[in-house]
Image (cartoon, rainbow, N blue to C red; front, side, top):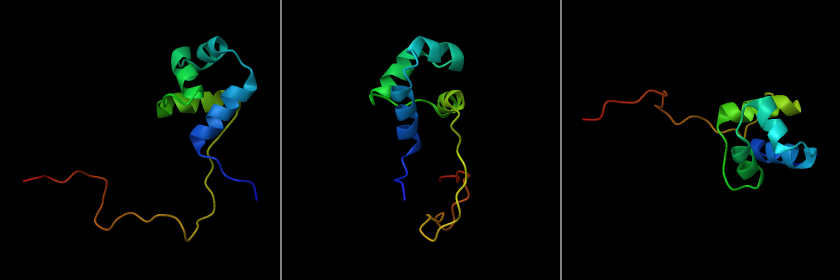
Length: 86
């Protein structure tokens, strides 16, 4: 079974192996080439909306996988809403 890479690694690999100039990526995705270059070198991260545009350019997509017993469960009592602190 092939090793599953994190999303950021897949995006970096797509950028680095594509040979597409950073100027072209910038023009096609709207993501600044300086940001793309730093991301490709592993020096910084990119915003999720930028990652979406880069993934779309390379034809990559995120798909759900079958549920696994190893998936993390949300902590009890967490609802995603901030609580009032007194």
